Length: 303
Ligand SMILES: [Zn+2]
Ligand SMILES: [Zn+2]
Image 1 (tube, rainbow, N blue to C red):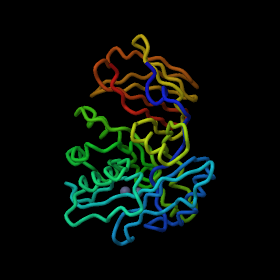
Image 2: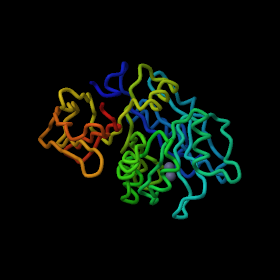
Image 3: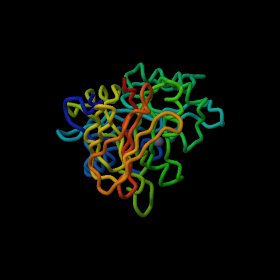
Image 4: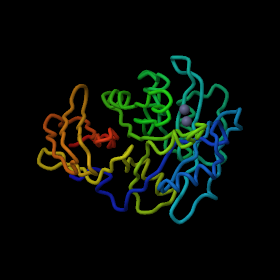
């Protein structure tokens, strides 16, 4: 059985789903943000400014930055009060219409996220480790499409990039969320304004580079997340998980609780790991290259 999205037609397109511009607290105007992503070899990005009153609830129309080899998805980072630790929610909405209405009085984070999803958005739990999001809070967003398993700005500025711990806890609950890596770039570093950019992305499998096709693929889970390595093929055959990828030093298969196995080597482009101990449960794959850069598959539940 070839695992999704490697069984799907089309090709992989590289995109960043989370970044900021002068429409909120970023340093660069949206057209320059788009230009930099295209110049860095990306095929698409989502301008996701803070959807807050102080910034005029921006959903930036980035359609002017689209070309034959680069496209944009409209979106925002949504906020609402009410986390158990006193922080406000940070929820990524990728694929929002320009007219998406500001939060209503007393609208909770989960209600706002539900409204975004109903408007067509791919909804993700943003940077859970960075602001101490608890499992109890996250469970109220159990219908979200994904969790940021890596947020590059939170790595660079706070050493709190992780979302895998929360993802695994939610999978253990029987919930299913997928794994995205993002930049959350603000381009504010005075000496190197790309310092918080180009560190985490998604590779989306689609036949065409159009916002609608990419969004449909995101919502269907047809993608993987990366900081560097490429995943080429995942397949389960005869109790073995076969992984084909760009050169890596570790291939790890993870399941519930303490279940994990790793195959180590030098410049491995193929690995085969037993899935015997993972039957009837979820599993996910992480590959790590010589520089410590990872790629994450979405979780799957093999038959
Ligand atoms: Zn945020
Ligand atoms: Zn952000």
